[in-house]
Length: 216
Image (cartoon, rainbow, N blue to C red; front, side, top):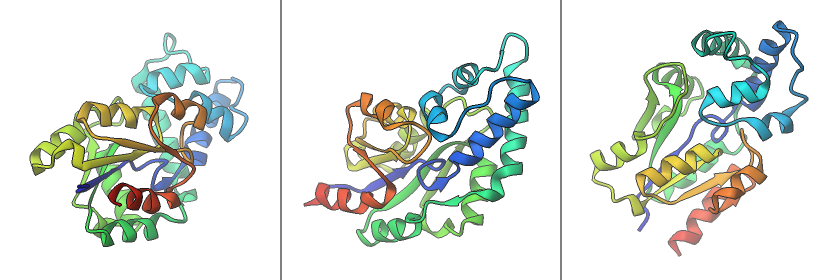
């Protein structure tokens, strides 16, 4: 019996792919490096840990400390953030999931303060029993967040489902012992997501039907 949906935030409910791409391209442009030529090249190289993504994008972590690059990227992301919003189906999907009697929580690699601010700005604060972010800006990993939350709530892992858009979401779900479904709309390509061997949906709007199938 399904009890809890654990949502990733960036790329799953919040459509910020273009903003993240713009932030990286601004960093590359400042250094005279080749830009990422659109959404698909970005989605093909984005990964966790973020250090590996920075290197794949062309930044030289031996010449500049990762920490200073992360501060720069975060500043650019917040500058461009007003351009982005929720995926069109997000509010309706959250309503539908709530009507199924399921609890909902966010598990994100965003800094806790930024996560709280964004969720409130998007008018979604009332949908979630918890919003779990990390304690710094370096987006190292959200490993352990889902596991600790489920344990604290007394929810057996098999009664939770993690919904995300990256292989890291799958890794977090594995660590927590809960099943996972990935969405091919966000920060990683379908080809990358399919290597996890879990269901991959095209977009958020398909989630309610997927859940009804699990509960049938």
